[in-house]
Image 1 (cartoon, helix red, strand yellow):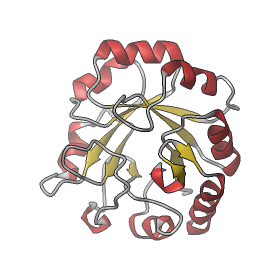
Image 2 (cartoon, rainbow, N blue to C red):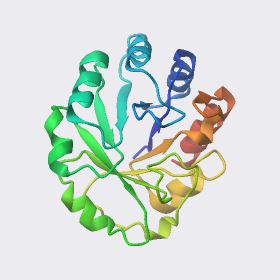
Image 3 (cartoon, helix red, strand yellow):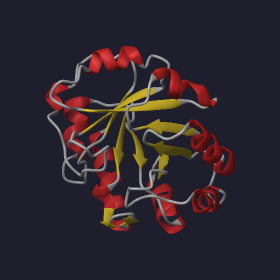
Image 4 (cartoon, rainbow, N blue to C red):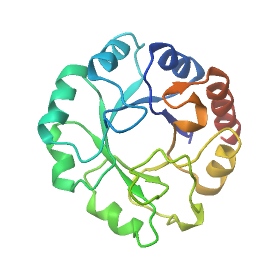
Length: 206
């Protein structure tokens, strides 16, 4: 099966269109204000309105209030939710949108237990762990720690770029890969050449 690709941290229309042109399946918009990749909902709405069909849009939140999440959804019409904090399954399930849950690979995390906890999710995203940082570290983790038979589709994140994504797909065989910093010229600004190279490596790995 073909490995899907989500390109996260979209802040500009030209980056979104470049990602789609290169073959990305999903675009991620970060609604976590401390992040250098944060995008205002009004800007995200303008970008989304100019996308072609069959591109999934994803909203990333970190321990956000329910009211704020609903406000962003109403404003942007985003397709899919990504929760990257300490949200509970009950919290994640309340928004009348499909969601997936990010799990940071701390030394004590039990991936199978977390996958069972979030059985209502469409997938589980595994990301690198750095204390106090909810994601976007640009660091990889030991892929050997990933259980072989997860009950949810696996989205692999954390330090992926054109130099290691083919190896990651070969070793882990994830449903999808999620990249942000690995295709940037600066935080929040994508690099078209890196996007194309990344997508080519994914295609070759399949």
